[in-house]
Length: 98
Image (cartoon, rainbow, N blue to C red; front, side):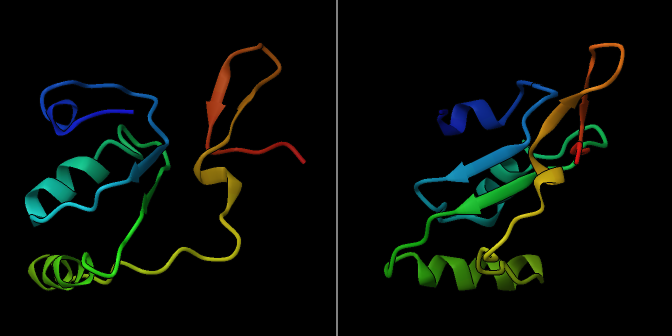
């Protein structure tokens, strides 16, 4: 759980999931928030909780960034957010043991 203050200037290397409870109004804020997931070559996922009122900001941010922010799929690939331990008992991100 964090505020927008945390999105700038603080480097945390093991953030795999970012959830935007309050969807941002500005594209720059959106980028700083979701940029916390999947840093330093690790996989990550950002989940946006969108209200009816947020749809205008969502559309504007998509236009400004030239991208589509897709609805959450029914199944999310666990390799995006699950860490597992290797044989040496150290953590590996992005891999799931079967």
